[in-house]
Length: 239
Image 1 (cartoon, rainbow, N blue to C red):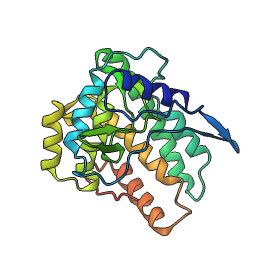
Image 2: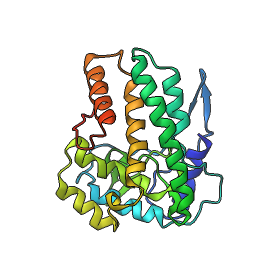
Image 3: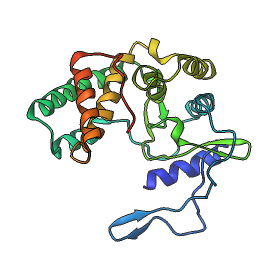
């Protein structure tokens, strides 16, 4: 929580279009075992709706910023995935064994990739998708700093790139994203490794919900089948 607040304040000082915390209020506040923070309110529904080209422009600006003057953790999605696997319910032993082995292999590949290309390492948003954009007047803001970390910048480009195969994003929209950012992450030498890590994260996140509804259980099964087969073109569904 302290990192999220520090990130927002630092981004605002850099002139980056971030959402500021309400520093006129003491925060964070502990309430019934939870931490609560307060942020400036941005009314929903401002038009025009932010586009993927807005996201690309914001990511390019974010990735060009200097290293922050406060502690930012390294990008490491594996402890979170491992925790989900340890708490899994309603999942077969075969699925768990596959995911555990896949995460171990992906972790080794991920850390080797990061070590091999330190120049591509920097500040990343960590969860860069269109849902984390808000419009305030003429500006589009990049919000949600929970996953901010130091890691391969290509990580922030993955959600949009994989959406073409997995969620039916029109290729023309992805092309506009690439043109604005100035790089096509699908041509990055580590793309397959990074994509595997992200898709394991997406699948273990969904795994937590398989006992909640038949639709989520069916989607988990679909994702598991595509991961087992290495099918990068199988269509997934956002739930």
